[in-house]
Length: 426
Picture 1: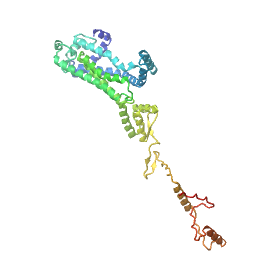
Picture 2 (picture 1 turned 90 degrees about the vertical axis):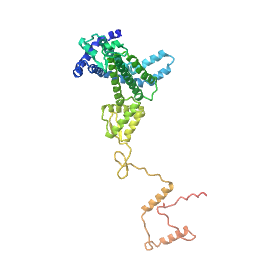
Picture 3 (picture 1 turned 45 degrees about the vertical axis):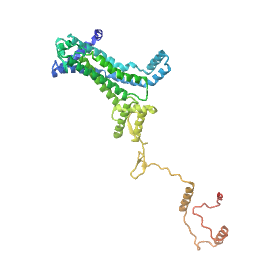
Picture 4 (picture 1 turned 60 degrees about the horizontal axis):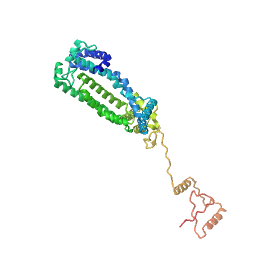
């Protein structure tokens, strides 16, 4: 461990300086020798480091998304060259180079925290050994040794002997109970962080070895924390528990507001966004507009949840635009007017198609219409010319020689020679 400490000795002075500055603030509030002053100084150190690492965390998210997008292609390469590991590695590196993806980018926050972690470990180990380090002089060293967190000294470990713990002014039972509780909380927070990533923010439509690896890490990391945690001082456990809680909260925020496409978190997010947009008829936040813009740009490549989101907007009379905004759509579903007439979203009456009629209905309707339009005329005996009477009588006699009069033609019947009707089939 001395070799590792010497490798990170260049950062022990900045870390000790930051702790001392926070201690001067909290010492004025809670007392310079209290566990609150030194414990909150370590917590503030973690928060400061994690704020500085936010750009790396954003890069980690982008790298993880890119790796998830490449999983189908990676699976094809593994199946194609499963008997040639060298060619498989070459094709993988070629795929990373073409897409500009770096698998190590997802590990950047952890790698960036490592120097601070080992520097803090070296600082606390020096306090336990009664050695000054960095800007921590003898007076600050004595103050740090007196500080206890719930009865456990800041520099005590789970594996320390009773004589060493008694030299720090505490009992071995108190130290082991406090360290055991902190190790359990540290492992549980790590497990929950990895579990919510696997259950909510992973594309469930793609089954790849990457998902199996992440699932395995969900159980391996907590065990690693439990094994190595018994060798960490109480101050380092405070540091690591704080960074785990920060990571868990940060990831919950990302999963809720920027979920992975195709994941369960995306379905919940788009459902909330649909309700908000349909109520206010607009996309309020810039982050939401960016997601809507990405969904519109996908076109036919949208997943099930994204298509459901677009259909939900259409049913509400809205349409998503290429810039991420929404407008009222003129092709929305028809609504009923006050008088019951179907109308479109623009308010114009909806054109109704006439029903198709049978042949007999068309003939009967045509004859009826012609009869209604034909002017009614009647000839009386005084108005009828005399020379027309013999002709009319002859016509009637020739039409029906057996006696009786021929019934008048139906109104609307076509005049002139008629085509004889075909004989009916018996």
